[in-house]
Amino acid sequence: MHVVLSVIYWNCSKFLWHSETYSLRISWYGLCFSLGILLSSISAIYLALSCFPEKDRFLFSKEQLKDALENFALYSLLFIIPGSRIAYILFYGGWFYLQNPLEMFKIWNGGLASHGGIVGLLLWAMIFSKKYKKKIPILTFLFICDLIASVFGIAAFLIRIGNFMNQEIVGTPTDLPWGVIFSSPSQGMAGIPLHPVQLYEGLSYLLLSSCLFFLSYKRYFSLGSGRVTSLALIGVSIIRFFAEFFKSHQGVVVSADCLFTMGQLLSFPMFMLGLSLGVSCFIRSKKNISSITEK
Image (cartoon, rainbow, N blue to C red; front, top):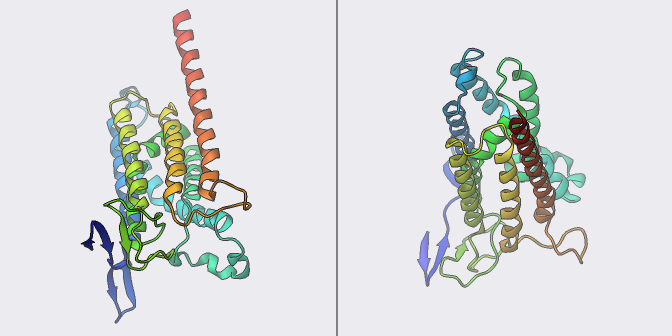
């Protein structure tokens, strides 16, 4: 990395380690992805144990809760990666994968969509909750979703760092002093100062998640109420929507007259889902307050 005329020239290798002898390599993206999932999982377990309900201590132990959440984290990749891949193929792949079907399975060549990863994770949360809720009543679907919403920012931030190291999902041209010139960006634009949009987006996710973690840890929002999940869905959709304006690959989708990118269009249902959940939580809390008042 070099600073040239008030801009940053980025020519870092995409690989942390590469062995030509054994044809092995460790990519920065793979490391960031794995580390992000690991740290988010550790944070989620810590948060769940710190909010352990003492009234349930005779029903299940902290150790049982910890073991269950470790299993959730371990198998979550079986839903996150396929979900991300399927969404990328459906919404971003175009005709390429229809003409080259075997390329669908080559995930090492890149091509993951975060919206699909979210859907995959929610599906796993539903399956997991049905399996464990009888043994550990606290593990409702909304409890798991609130946990994920409180810690997702660590993984999201590190994944965007991986994108930055890979010189992909690059930004639009800029004359700002923190513009980055990538040596070999995947979308072209070499030699032009670009917005480090990967860092904008990643830091925004980290800030949002940190606030939600604080609110959950201090018990301003109780895990399982759905409020944290609602705020996360709304926040992520807004961040993604505005981040797309700074991405050089945004292009036009659906038709030449469409004003929005695919990433922005996919953010609309996420926003509406978060808003609907938030309204539902508000109505439910009002009913609870009314019932308590009547008593």
